[in-house]
Image (cartoon, rainbow, N blue to C red):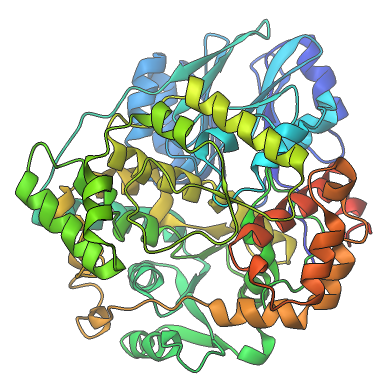
Length: 612
């Protein structure tokens, strides 16, 4: 089953050039909002999200996405509020996940999500600046040339945040997280950084109360309109909490669980236990016979991702649950994606406490060391190692080739990325240049090492919300939404003191406290998480021929970034240990993204099977 993932919007200034650009986006786009002059202000195709458009005396407002505010309330503000600064305060106080476009005195103020779940891109077309949430619509307008050196960094696992933010296509600029854009009527633009949040440090009880309120509101933003909503119930803490919250709202909820194949997998058992506590809610199980293995259906059609994503290797697994969800006709499908990023906690955060609360910090670090089997001397060295962000990256400018050692303390400014053994010398040189650029120019996301690492994990995770949504749509499924990655939920979680939310021995203590009384204690007893590695290993063997064929006419190989013959040979013998470090996913991501670039985003006929 295939669908259409060609969603997105483009924002245009109030001038003649904007009208011409809007015409060039037909037939894909329709006018979603007009300037007061009657010229198009927002054009696009957004069946995957609610769109609210109000035109008041003081401002014109467009909200695209799930926002917990009524259209009448938006109109009331638009009638009386003409201050961009005041609008920023109003919008920051709205729960949900959305893009906002506010026109005041001819200037367009455009914002996405502060933590990255709603991204934005800027381009200059016909002498004016425009913005969009999809690079593919902009690419049709600017014909941006691919930067092979930037693409090479996407072969890494993981991709460092600052390299992931570099423009892949010339003339199309990603906006940094927390950055908005102001477009003037003449077509000039300027970036505007959101004001830094006031640091709030809460204890567990107060923090759990705030997280609970924000999670309830985030889910309500998706369910308040009623209708049918599906929710993934994997059996883990995260999706279980979302499912119980959704069941309290006015929407008709259907819970979906995929049955795993691994005999050691406990997810189904916990999902069934949770469902028994929701007897009024429909629960449907996807049989394991209908759940594809990893690597299935890689060339089933374009997904139109803004950038390569390793998640594409599991697209058919996402698609199978999405297709099941579609049979119930939901307005949205909820997922627990993001719970791990917010609530598992990272040992590096205890390193930040060493000079303020040394005993607390050392107890936390030793606990993670015992859990991870770290050697004491490595733990001490990692804890006191003084390098700042740039110095650390300068020292780690050469990625690891092959599977990294997992028993070393994870206390650096990042995980040293792995590069595939099939990467060419040209790719390695480009990666080295990129990391060297980062070591010379980039600033950390926060001054403290642990906070930076945590923010990088959250921001890069939040960016995958759009990936999962497009994969669902490409499979004929409903829009997919991840409430944990809403800005206000993230801010609430990060406001809690590290010792109260990060523990080596207690599983997700902050989330447990937040949903206690909503999720039954019997369900919250779980202290484990299944990995799903079994289906990855079997998928390599089962889809060996398709993987070999993928590299027969490799675009990456033609660009000189990978040795496609070597990779084809490794895939022919899928027990090769070289395929185990995650760079197989990143390589597939780059290959399939390149193939999407060969298609015409504006033509619906190009949403079918991929070109060979």
